[in-house]
Length: 167
Image (cartoon, rainbow, N blue to C red):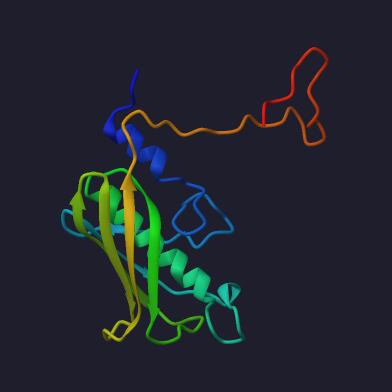
């Protein structure tokens, strides 16, 4: 039986996501809110835990936040797609403790290709980052593939009579 669209969206919104997962104690736990038919917004204040150089939030962390904003916008628009290409323009630095507004939106959708954009701005509108991405819609037949968990932490060899997985 094929999952419903709501069930599929729940699969794509992972509660353990490092950016927006509400159940990841080590993550940023950014809460995105739908803003229109194909956009999301959030407010985020990065801590010093996300620093690269002293006093600056790591660019990879900032990029991950923009990727999550675009991904959430795609899901909010009713599409199920994964990032396949992304470009980021850094217009200024972000410091730990600096409150940022994040916005992601869908630009276009044609066939399996979806384009999206995201930006990160200060409360007074100073844009610090802007991102553009291409997403590919997941085919309806796609189902998440998860590797089976090992039987215990030290048990990576097949049990007697089992065949090792094909590589």
